[in-house]
Amino acid sequence: MAILPIDSGRYGTKEMLNIFDEKQKIKHQLEVESAVALSQAKLNLIPFSAARDILNVIKSNRITINQLKKLEMKNEHDTASLIEAMSNKCEKNTKPWIHYGLTSNDLVDTSNSMQIRDALKIIQYKISKLLVLLSSKAIMYKNLPAVGRTHGQHASIISFGLKFANWGLEMLKHQERIEECKKRVLICKTLGVVGTGSLMGSQAVNVQKMVSKKLGLYPIEVATQVIPRERYSEYIFQLVLIGSTLDKISVEIRNLQRTEIGEVQEYFKSGQVGSSAVPVKRNPIKSERISSLSKLLRGYLITAFENIPLWHERDLSNSANERFIIPTCTILLDEMLETSIKIIKNMIINRQKILQNINLTGGRIFSEFIMQELIKKGIPRLSAYKNIQRISFISSESGKDYITLLKADKMISSNIKTRDIDNIFAPENHLGSSDIIINNVCKMIKKYFQKIEVK
Image (cartoon, rainbow, N blue to C red):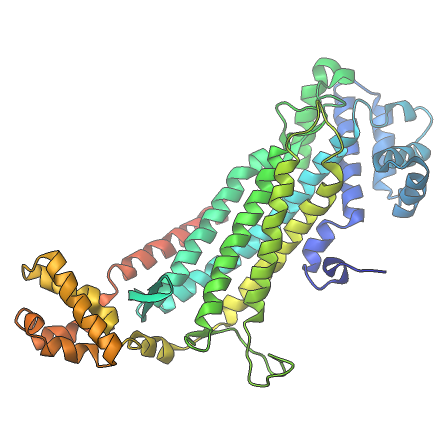
């Protein structure tokens, strides 16, 4: 029998897998049934005795997975099996009021929201852990000059801490996006077969409000038989967006760990094997895992978008795939976050190699600052640019030291003093506003934590 990687436990934390466990799904659907029955009784739509009976049956845990499986083998309908199981346990006078005014997707969609609600708590907690680590690393390395690369080429000097600040701010924005989308995604729907709440009449909206409050969800303002699938698409999009940021971080780490660069390294524990054939290898396998899972995650977004246009008040063309994409995307992102936390926490930073790489081009990385100094002396920008480029190309082609060529060039030496050239070639003098930028980002992150502590 084939076992998927998620089923085998290779990917996904226990806490997240538990949220999407079949038992948990049924538990949530029974919670919906009990909340609806109680709300209907309070509004005199069904007898209080029926609501109490339904609640007692659900609380007593007398409905089991095995019972539901046996019933579903006969009727081929999971929700109908749940209702039949409840009916088998309830008193005779209660049976007419079970699932009163509801349809299958009232349970399916609302229980999906409950699972997403619980999953987002874990996701946000782990993003917060990552935020703390990124903020700490940003401060730790804010005064460490490093090579800034564009198009894969050395461009100018940056603060190494700026990388972490950049990542940290985007993770903070993800927290903001999650909070914002909750009111659109964590939806309760109990409006029946075509969204009119017909059997409950004018009280249908009030029932839904009461149930939503009890379950910690938001009532849908208007629906067909199902909530609009734009809501799930937005949720999947949020997961994909977070996953893509984690992929961006991983790609940078993978590049910086390349033998030719060697500025960072994933933690390599004792006994770990990098390659079955090459004993010396220390591969960035955790970062590569994140990149791999991110590709898979992005693919599911297409399916979520395809689910938006359904026939009339609904069809089933979304149903089967949503059983995959909602839990799978959530479990994959949780795995990626868990892995990212371990990577950032245990990452080895090679300060010596970072500083060595600045001089890899013989000093040509400082050309921006030489040109700026010429412009300050009144040299036209284009003339300054061409002369700097001329000397840079000579250095590149001949292998001669760039600073030596600059000092020997009449055009340069007649405008910039030797000691000023030496100062320009000190990388710590070119961190710009990095300190201010990094501190501002870390303040924003700190402010976020203060805000959620108040809540």
